[in-house]
Image (cartoon, rainbow, N blue to C red; front, side, top):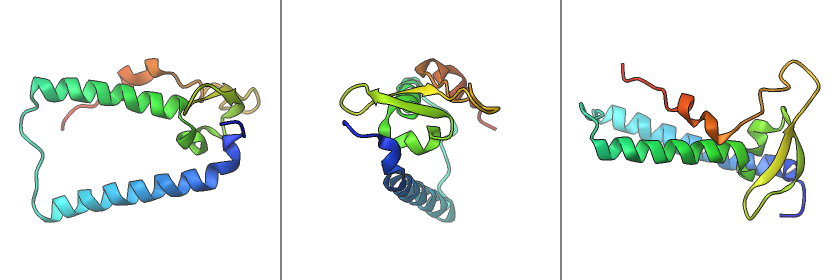
Length: 115
């Protein structure tokens, strides 16, 4: 990846929108069909959720596809690997540190509780 991924944000937004629409539609369909989440979560599911949370954190922090989410807060610096990019927080405006994403944030992202 040699060019600036901020130029491709339209395509990335389309991909994220389609994905969100499909997931939302399937969730609504499951609800209409009366499907309910399980009452108990097994230890294997907890491990799986932990790995998925780490991967989600990494995707949000480094992947080019999520560039549109970070674009208002970051400046593109260059490619970091096959599918990752390096960005730095913008130093202007009120939200300059909001984009200091890090995989270390996965702990608070996974802090959901079942109601």
